[in-house]
Image 1 (cartoon, helix red, strand yellow):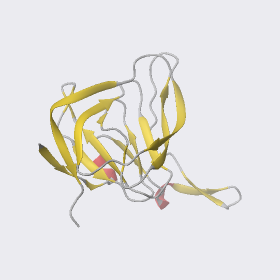
Image 2 (cartoon, helix red, strand yellow):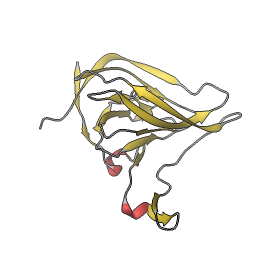
Image 3 (cartoon, one colour):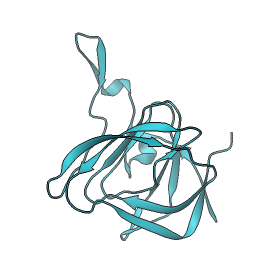
Image 4 (cartoon, one colour):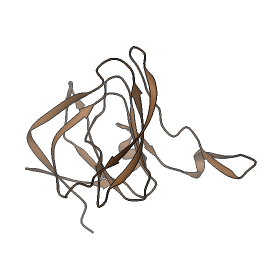
Length: 165
């Protein structure tokens, strides 16, 4: 099995695949008479296709055992897909570059508390992968007509490991 070591999630490292969603001082301003700090425009939400609309959901994910065997990735040709954890627990983020319509070698990232991701439209990515405990996630993605899911099964799986401490 081919081994991939997860790396810390950073905006620069993740930029080819979408947006890292996190509250940073440079993206904020006060609202509600100064009682609230708004962290503004943190991700590019993309929706396309017939009768497309932005959809907000909550998903409850069960934790995965590690190391993770990665057999499959998916992508959404009609819209982006954002996941923001509603807890402070980390989760794995797995993405692949597109190589002529097929996923290339995966990259794995581990989030820190307060980080979420927005997968850009057509980005190959792994499934929602909580670590350690059940987690709830706010999801922002595309609703509407049309097939917005493409799956790819690797002929030989990858094994995803957390970095050694």
